Length: 106
Image 1: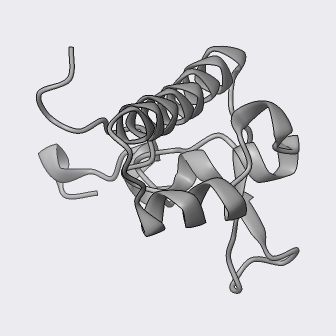
Image 2: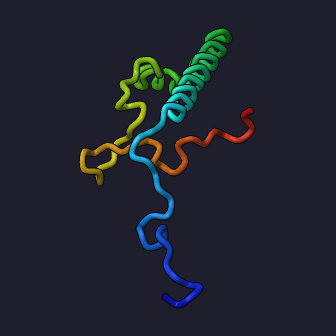
């Protein structure tokens, strides 16, 4: 079809960037590591504020409402709510920036 401009399989077959329907074991391990890092930051900030005799309302609310990584169910770790999906959950790895860490972190 048109010589040099013939359609290739990826271009005629739908999405060019394929996203697997489930996360691999290394992806899950990295996600758990990031969740534990968040728990560590919350603990460090809470300890530092407590040592100085202060507390933060937002931090206390976070500790009450948000489960730690070891308390979370796998369904909550690896999927997120999406009202457009058939069973209302989609893999967290299909979200564009789920693995980005803030800049300045080593």
